[in-house]
Length: 356
Image: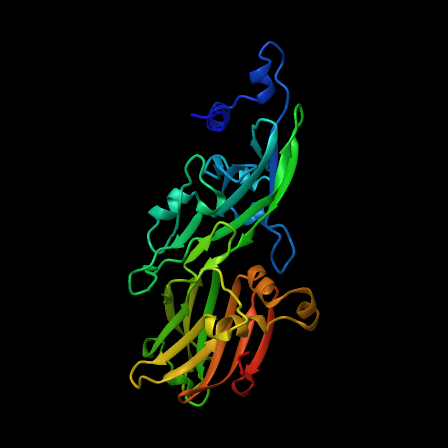
């Protein structure tokens, strides 16, 4: 075993044992503060507000040395009787020897092990081993060989990502303060259908809803490995009926609803690589809706946001989208696109959709 490997093992032992570096070297004096206090923020959203304490329930930090080699991880989660992440002043303390470090962060609403036990589709993480490089970390959305994501009528657990590529330096005899910003990777997309001429005939069971993408594998730096196609289906679908006044006669209108949750959406320069929302009428086999999903959602940007956010940043900041399509026969006439967080909405005519 060379000196480098010995140092890594020593550092891991110090981490697991909770021993401070100065206390280890000078055990005849009072322990002195050292290491990192990590603050987490989830303000990379369209509200531009920190929602970490309200949304995140579990956070895991993967620590790497200056050369990008894995040292150890630390995880903290909320529990029924102890919910540290709900504290607005929450910090994760990492007891470390002086040096420079990188880290990658994952976060969920519940502990990772619980997401696996909950059933449905899950993000399966790789566990780096001592000395592995940062690029060994991945999160892969479970899917079948035919590409279908088996949601089992359950929503996808929310995943956040953060990282520190520029080394953070830990100094002797003091606590280093650092902040990591989280990006939400999972998206909620709600689809509604309404028939303009014959609203009473709408039935969600008559349609096949799908989102086609290549975003099941997220890399250590939150980029998407697009080597495998995946197919999302709604985790819940239903009909709703118009509310009518007592004594009112006539046809009661209906709307069909289908709710999806997906992995990170990517806006490509090449439209052929973008995710597709496809809705097909089952009996006729007619695809009544086929739209470029990232392009359609990015059109919600206001005039000011076109200059503030790129299409990709807008998609990464947003997470709760609603699309209401209005059909006439086997063709959609227009769609109302809304992002519920800010109650923004835009009506887009079929004729306007000349995707990129």
